[in-house]
Image 1: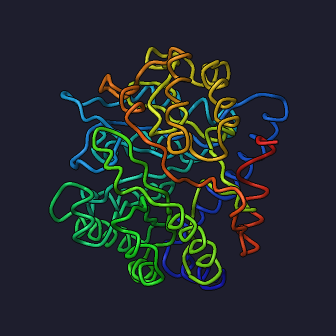
Image 2: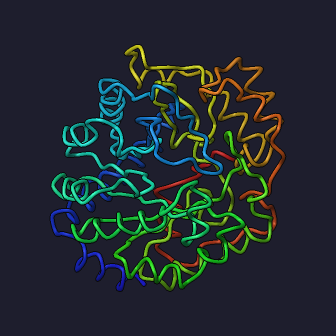
Length: 397
């Protein structure tokens, strides 16, 4: 698997882009994780990875999406985005996930990325507005990878995304990326309607044939104004997904990613261990993208680094989350989460002014945390990477 994936990367990715990926994401990314662990040992929490929603503009309306598309739309001011990046760089953190809405609708997106050649950016996109010009610009910059969301094959994908031609639009985006020899990824939110199609070796081969180098599986969360809870996976499906991921890592010439299990198969929450947080378009610092509550805002020009280190809300959330579950508090204990955000007097950052009401309406769903049914990593490289460079670090005792 490693040899075949390595061969694909060397032959399919432009050499300059592969060098940027190895240096910025690989070498500097490992150093960022080591710096994070050193800070944690001193009781200082500053994320190694920061996700930023640069806009709430979007051309789709997806089931389970938490983003409120306002009128007029909200774009994060460029100086606020640069504040986040500058403060992270000072701490040695150089990897950023750029979300929306649809980030390719954010004005001057590439101008900001161009200012930071020593950083690495992942653009999480639905792919339908990713043009050939965008792909050429990403090749020119070199320090960016597109992560294109595919939520099913044609019929299911269009239903999930609330539009026609969405699946084909995503495939067109992949084709543009392949033409420019980019490091390219695909992400999917696994749910009942797409499980059989996407949790399969055939689907991974479908992606490999289209020049995709990494696949990120995550579990559907029934949140937002269209939660659609009937799409949530049951416990057996989640275990089957985990088993598939572990086996695929040993067999397929594509990197298969997840962010919610450690090397022993224990569930964990990246926000609970402080390894990542999210900044909304309005400048709120949230635990993670779908958890839209916060007490800290940098929209007024406040320093991101100082605010995130001193945030009593984030500190209280980390403690609450670790004591409540090893998994996702949104899925495992939405009622307790509602009580927590109300007691913390946190602001509703959703833009819908009904965040606690949405929590009250949520029911507990099976999640990553299924004690006694852990499935450890089998492949030595994934196991080593998760143990030493990502996750846990003793946060759960």
